[in-house]
Image (cartoon, rainbow, N blue to C red):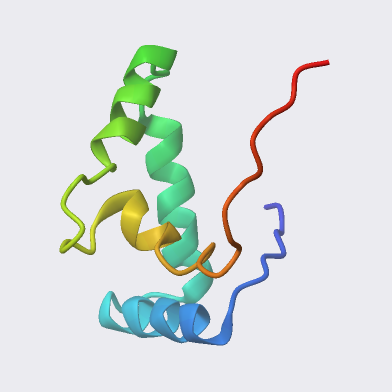
Length: 87
């Protein structure tokens, strides 16, 4: 059996440990179930992939779902892009 090293933030690791304990399995086995599930999925087309990504986009600023929630504070304070210049 192969070994994998992953790097997680402390709160993410704590959540994984809690979920594994709730499922009564080791953290390693808990992560392995996700890899196994991915292996069982049929190969999806690029259209399906992008449709899934697009479905995560939310247009309502009051929601905390999808990409909006992931990126909400990540790029705040960076300012505005400068206009592109043609060469």
